[in-house]
Length: 241
Image: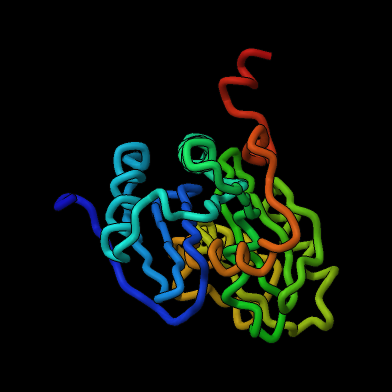
């Protein structure tokens, strides 16, 4: 993998042999939680998710001294995000779930993007470029989502922010791969001093997938026949009517 940018490391936390896979955007990330700690990898994979995702899984298992057969749960991004990326992540997670006989959990991508910003003292707005001059978004305040997931034009997003703000000066933070592009639209309607961009807006979300999955694992798991939430039809579906 010499021709890709990869970061691997550990961080504090507890888990029970849970594998989390995120391929919703250009950054491919994976995290593995065990009783001994948590390992994760992020790769600027571009369009190479399919050839790199299992390599990430194998690498994490070897680093953690774990056999794939020891995995107890697999987690993936539910969407929205890249159509191809979501399919790759979901199919890989499903394959592991079926082959190993373990539960599958799918977590909304926007929830994961907002998760590490829960202490922000204002509105949290994760954004993914949905093309066609729109963004996949949802509004959060603290750890709670306060709007529906949407596929929305930037002008409408700015108007929604003004409408739901506690006051005209409530700070807004943008995150996700579409953050910088959405910022350029929103500052036309909202004072720029009230909007900030998360410095780590392009990060992978496998660690967040893992943490959220740990919090819901005792409640429910996803049907193995479920699939990603795209929020809109693919270009191929639209052209086909």
